[in-house]
Structures are given as structure tokens and as C-alpha cells.
Image (cartoon, rainbow over all chains, first blue to last red; front, side):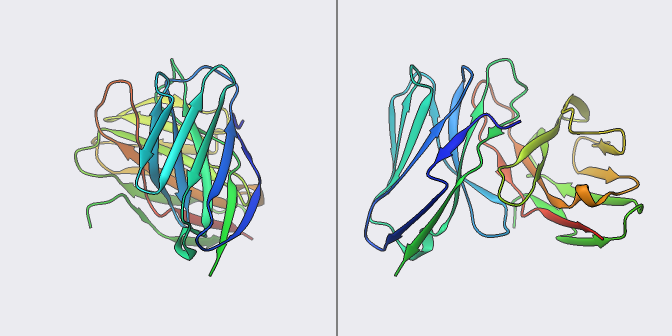
Length: 112
Length: 115
């Protein structure tokens, strides 16, 4: 079963614009991670935010976490055509063996 | 290339046949995971190894599926008597020994098509 729900399911923007994707989850977590997947390929880890953190930055990425609302957002600033991919949030729940529970993903298309 | 590798990248088989996939994790990683991903969905956890011990299995892993990691290095995932519903991307991931936080490194996946 999938824990996370990303929103929107699909997003189409122009190069240079910002892209915001949201993720909601159901249970308490140790951390929340965002991954990127190019079409038909494996996943690439982007950023991890711990349950006691509220915001984290990495390059053009900004992630927020609101544990009271069980939600997270991923902001990609100044998007590029190469950012076109599917983006997934994944949670690592307390008591788990570290297996990740993924959402269904947001498909981002950045047009040049 | 020191990333996670998977072999084969693509497999087409007929219903009822057995298939086996291999995953080579990053060398110093003792944790290894298998996931399955169908079109339009996120990956779903199948099973987890710490060294050679299989510590967790999803209920998605029916008795037709078996996974091994005999020496705590590479792992194999075998599907017996394949069904069309087994068609999916099978992803392997590994992570280093760690405490609480668990960034996983994924391989490119094996895409299985069952005809």
C-alpha cells in the first residue's frame, strides 16, 4: 500500500519558473525523502528531511515538513528542462526496517 | 561505476516461465532492498536484507517469489511460474550501515514483461 499522496499528479511549467509539489502521509515518521525518476530509469535521491526539521535546502531545492499536518512540499526554483521527471516522496516510518513507503509521484514537465 | 547495478535491464518471458534477476549493491552497503514499480505508481517494498539475513518481507511477495543474498553481497530475486500481473519494473536499492536515517541508492531496475 502507498502511504504518500503527491499533489498535483502532473505539473507543466516553463523553464525558469518555480515548481512546487506537495506530499501528504498517514503515519508518524522518522524522516521524509524526495526522489527523482527520469522516464523508465531508477530513482535518484534528492534530499532527506528529519522529523525534527522544518525546512531544508539543497541547491535549487527547498523542502518543508509539517508533522502536525503530515505533509511536505518540494520547491524547485528556476526550473530547467533537465528537471523534467517524476518526483516521489517516501517515508521511513518508526519501527520499520528502513523500507521506504512511496507516494504515486508528481510528473513534472519543464518546457524550454 | 560504483553504483548499484542490476542485471538484466530488460526481460521478456512467457507466462509460466521462471525468471531470476540479480542486484549488485554498493560494496560497503550492508542493507539491500527490493521494490516493484508498476506504470504510474511509486515503488512498493518487497523485501529487505541486512547482510545475508532476510529481515522483512512484504505480503506482496507471494510464495512464487524468493530472494536470496547468500554472502551478504549480491542478491537475486526469482519469480516462479510468472503471471502477466508480474509485469513491472523491479528495483534494487542499497544503503550503508546507519542508525536512524536511511538514504537509499537505487539501481536502474529490471523491466519484466510477461507475455
